[in-house]
Image (cartoon, rainbow, N blue to C red; front, side, top):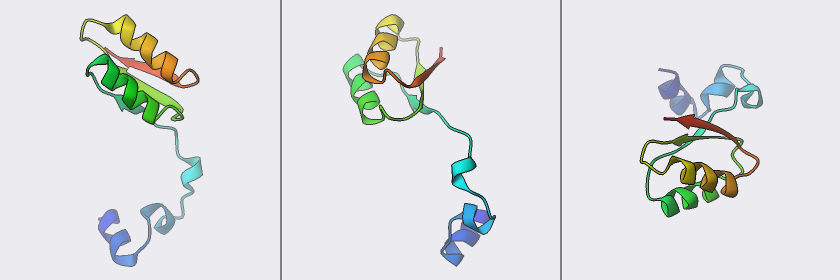
Length: 81
């Protein structure tokens, strides 16, 4: 309902509700399981994102963690195993 109302009014929902998006909690960007080079490229695209969640379980977990850390050394890394 809020989304529809915002679209009808031409305003983002946060503004209609009087909220400041700068006060919203940080969210993670999920890096899904794929070939290591694809994962590396995906991390490069979002390397400035403050928190990354990486999916593990494909058998090369250590390589994935090392690749993510090398591409985004300052990001908080969370693991979804």
